[in-house]
Image (cartoon, rainbow, N blue to C red):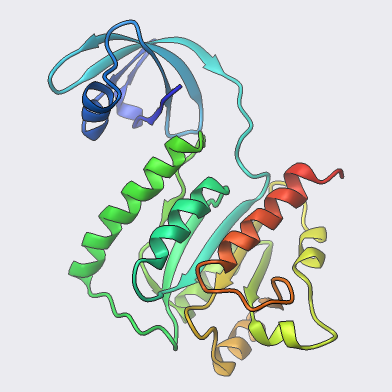
Length: 251
């Protein structure tokens, strides 16, 4: 059943009024009409099975049939801070990271980031990124749309991470030593409903200065397996491991 995320002001007791781009998707892409059923999510993560009652040019009205009991969000909140990479790598990170359960995304300017975003460029990119995240949330039947925060510096990243229970960064040098800190050992220290901050470097990883700065501010350097991963692969590896540990592994 197709899912749509509807803002709070569109809910009217036992019905919901859908506007904007979703109207085009409902009427032109899916070709739904009165009597068809859809799932609508509110901004608090609650989902309702609804039946379309009216289709107009610029809005669709649907009646709430029943509220659904769903548990599809990761048991811990995982924020992915990602050093700004080249090309369209973040498109993949945001799409697949959403499917894998990320709570929030933060791009940041790392020492080895080549790309520079000014305000105008970020506004254009953020519109596309938010659309990618919303569509991935609908496709994967999430109950919440991950937050996309404005780009930060590494010092702002450290400040932002101050209220997290656990903070880690993927450091390729950690994969080369014998006495390494495994990602699994970090997850074993966490309980459900806690918050995890995962910091991923751009192409080329973190500089030694950045690594030391993160360590000095409570971040644990971890290896994500014995192989060196591409920058766009690392957050997906981390999220898949988190999902397995907290959702599939017998505890």
